[in-house]
View (cartoon, rainbow, N blue to C red):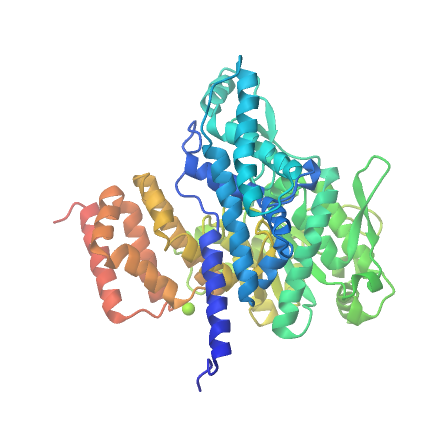
Length: 597
Ligand code: BEZ
Ligand code: MG
């Protein structure tokens, strides 16, 4: 049967594909490693400022440039254009017009000619800004009725960021630090998330854990929690009763607790602040307002989170206890439902069955699942899930008498909690580090998913959010890996950017392949075509293989070996001819490194 039997079907499919291409094209990727002490180049600055300008900044009273342009053109709001462009050609055309104008205006603003005409530097700078603003604003007003006062606000921010990106005091700051001198503090985040991180070269500070989650984090978390539930509902026709959620420390510093706030939303509570504005308790959102059941959330938190956010772990534990005790129907309150199931069998007390916050034992960090994968020290993938449980099965919180049980061994409780899980999830709040850039995503989210597979008897559906895309998207793990692979490992802009760094660039490419393999090992979530294309790009292309080999034969050998390992473990169905070429390349690299031949 031809699935594209009508012209309409065909047009719909073409539009969907076109939107996918846009998604890959517009994804912000690093095109090289940061070089300490070196400021950003012009192209990077344009990309970054375009991204910064694409978000509303209510805290600064600034509206997103694409939204101003959409309004000036009498189009629907930019968010609507994004939402509808995958199914409507006119919306897609409007979206592309808006995006092109925004980029063009920023480019004009950045490249306006410099004229020195004022008596001193400050006055020169001010008049230069006015000239550049006029340059961009005139262009915009010719195209769309963009309010000048609104444009001035956004371009004022951009001009400040441009100056900060063009200067770099990292080396001086390092030398001052080595001399034991004072380094100015600054927040840590993604530039798009919080432009106040500039200038770099400062002493990055954390947040007061009592402020977590902040009001902004709570507001930003709601649509993401909703999108996660909707995505699963649309795919399966029901809400997941239990979600396993991974929480990290640094992410929650950067976002002041966006992921923490998501966990609270899922359970159907919001933070309640005391007289000192500390988030120490929760307020129950009535079911009528929530409009859906309260989800059971099993949280596995990193060692860093445990160290930094003790009060936040107490808040999350308190939230679960509070929800468990609400007098509500079981089909509207899955925490209560599961608690009832566990306590009526007599196997668990209330205080045992209500534990939802797990981490490492005191003083321990990480799952070690990544090390096991990197060193190929596993036979059966179940060992990876078992290791996760061994490392993360320590409970945190306070019992009904208010006594702390922080760090108590609780393997049986974690196993029972994981046995209920249908969905596993982690919030991704940055464009800087993706799930195939480092080994920590697969060790955590892959590790917990593998453990769920054993105790629940089925692999959970695995989701990741992308809270920095303008629509706060949620994607499945498989979708995320495809997008990451297309925008990084298989994207010449990305790998050529890395190869400029020689030895370390090849190492970055190898890490990308190995971390992708980590998702095969823990979740079997990598399509065959991904390995086919990686082999084709980096090994079967002889000129490329030669470049990699001459720059860094060690990483090249690891990369080729990883592909062979994927095939050997049955995680990639490769063609025999391809495997033979890989084997030949591997043997050649081995010989080279051992000085043979
Ligand atoms: C964290 O911030 O909690 C974290 C950072 C790196 C790896 C794992 C966790
Ligand atoms: Mg496979």
